[in-house]
Image (cartoon, rainbow, N blue to C red):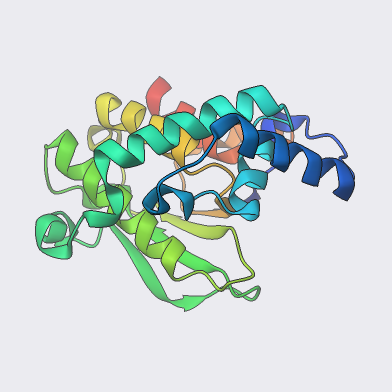
Length: 216
């Protein structure tokens, strides 16, 4: 059994915003965040600001707060400086990796295999996840903002789930990589997933997937 789930519009209630309004909101955010060092300014392109606005349903104040928190996190965590040698041991079982193929829309495909967890270090697991996200984004075509997740649940059971890691994963991905998930393909998911995607097709698959893991 498998399920292909598209990411719904932000918070399930994205509203229509004209191009002119989008530009005005982007300009407003730029005024609110002020000048930035070049190292951080590269993460504030118009496309990036648009993603933060969509993630907060075009609310400028909420999007600005979210962006500022991400910029602070980037300045402290330095995700772009994580090197392969530092996380290679986390990758030994192939629990997360960027596929060498793309989907029909040219988007990067990130493969996740929850049953292949091989360490107990929360810090190590999160740094490896961030490394994979950064790598996947770097390999997106210039005209693409979102990626595809192929989540293979073969061999999965609840013992593979760490609540602490899942919570931190939710925080990192939702708060610092907004609107990056375009499609999630769940291969052979556990039966307890079924009721959630049958209730309504209009949900944030990212949040729902993490909720399922946390609530089991």
